[in-house]
Image (spheres, helix red, strand yellow):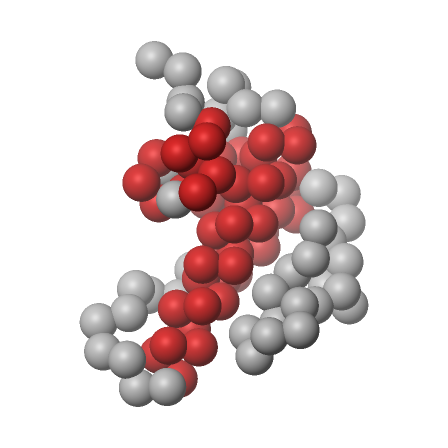
Length: 92
């Protein structure tokens, strides 16, 4: 069954078990994989901020795995381009 790209782009964890599953998915183009992984990175950064703020039950930090998956799809991640929010998410 083909991957539901729109659902994956909005809620990556609902479609993929891990960031690496995005990388190896044959149903997505390179650009779609980047979109999904960037969203996943944003979500992980939001959870990290929530944990720092004392929110209980937040998911284990996956940022390293997500960045590794992004590195596998992209040849260069512009880590110097961070978002304006507290979590400094990656900008595409």
